[in-house]
Image (tube, rainbow, N blue to C red; front, side):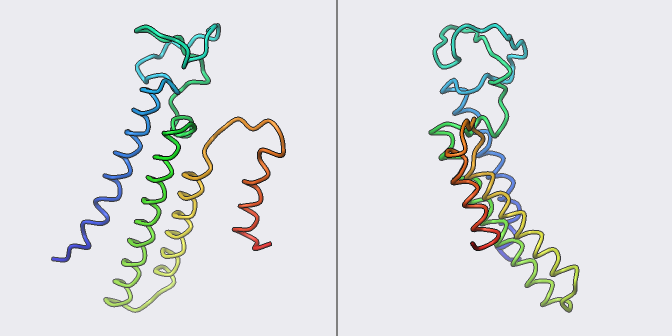
Length: 156
């Protein structure tokens, strides 16, 4: 039995654990509200990070979505690390599977399609991890993301 079989099992274990750690960091730093606070109020007077006490006044802007949990430092750095590591593991797993199918059987269209779709999924995970959700107000703030995508996909 090969040790390579640990890789597909460790991918979801590490990424799911990492996402929960990002959520815990965001709740600890009061960047999002905890999931047990389902009474969101539209009339909160103070920002979430300025509040103190056992109960927090949460608005719909503080719902703990993964893109909002990983929006501010230090959570954004850890989310980028988790997504980049996960996408590298996806690339390695898909490549090993592709080579295994070629070794055991002949190469087919379905095998090549699965390799392509795996690499596209890994590229999407890299984009999610490195371009977090934030409120952009002007075109100067969003221009670097558009230029990166343009160079990535079109090469110009």
